[in-house]
Structures are given as C-alpha cells and as structure tokens.
Image (cartoon, rainbow, N blue to C red; front, side):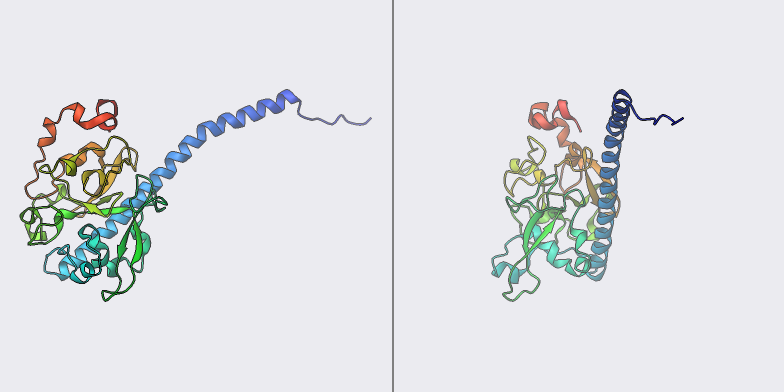
Length: 273
C-alpha cells in the first residue's frame, strides 16, 4: 500500500506566511534601532579620537588653540575660518580619513556644499599652501569656532570672547568642541539674531551665518553627539544646545526667557526633544 504524500494545504501555507510576516514586522524595527544605536556608538568613538587629536595639537602648542586664520590659504581664496581646523589638524586624521565622517551621515550632499542631518558637508581644504588645487574634503562634524586663539574678530565673532587656550577654559565639561554638524563649524551667540535662531525643521539650511542651525540637527534619536573640552563625549538633546557654554561671555540662562513661539514648529512644545 502506497503511503499518502503529506503536503501543506493552502490555508496552512497562508498561516505560515502570515506568521513570518508578523515576526518580520516585530523584528525589523528592533533591527533598525540596533543599527542606529551602532552608528551612534561609532560616531561617539570618532569624536573621542578627535579629542585625542585636539589634545596632541594643543600640547604641542603650549595649550594654545589654532588661530582660525591661514594667510596663505586666504590668499588663495580660502577665506573660511570655520573650516580651518581640517587643514590644521591634518596630520591627526590624514591616515584615517573615516574620522571625518559620522556613520549616520557619511554621504555628501549631491545638491550643495552644506550637509544635513543625514548628509556630510564639503569644504575646500589645501594640502599644500602654495597654489595647489583645492581638495573637496567631506565631513559630518563641525568645530565650535569660539575656540580659536585670535586677536581679531572672525566672521563677526568678537575676538575677546574666544577661548584661545586650554588654560582659559572654565567648566570644560560645558564647553562644546566638536559636534555633529551640517557645516564646517559655527559660533552661536545671542548678539546676532541669525546666529542663534533655531531651525524650523530638521536639517533646515539658511546660510552659513545661521550658526546654531549648523549643529541643531536630530541625527541620533533626538540629539547631537558632542565632544566637550574635558574630553567627554555625550549625546546632547537638540534644545540643550542653547544651554551650552559656547564662548566666554555666552549667557547659558538666557534661553529660559525664550517664548515657545520663538522655538518654531519643530522645537516647540509639540517636539521638545
């Protein structure tokens, strides 16, 4: 007697497919969160490396920070103090160019030099300072441009308010150094409205003079990975950026007076991340 061949019925097959689909629906969000957490952890590791690069530079310069100016670069049309750090610190990252890129924003913007919450920015850098061609370096990070050791105002930022040296930094754990950014850097300050204005949506780009917008992006689950002057790295909530000690005279309490309407639709009460 020939045994009967067992096979799935159509209903049983549909049940199996439904179970697989249900499991995928449960697992996929978890896997997505795990990938994002892994990228954020890798980003924090990158920022720790930048902290080491910065320490090596300042230790070799008797505590002094970079000036923000490179005369030869300026003579070649590279008048970009915000991006001066990438050339100054080149010896610290040149053999490891991935240090310039956050894993969550490693792709350059195909539509312009500015980045976004998920795109890297591009700026002209000069490996050789005697008429050599510009190199289009891409990065996902930006510098707090108030750190420079300058005796002249840089891009409307008052010289006397700059930190200038590691010896002049007080409460180093409150002073940002490198952060996730969609531009080369920035120097937020209250005295210039556009330099402190919040974005209306995640990744809004106005122009380079909108300094706080460069950093105010939701790249890592509601926040911005940040390296501080004391070497610590942590995620900063977007709205917390206004409470950091950007420069010597920066009023960290002034943000408490801002009405909800000032924050706009993205960072208002409806989105207080």
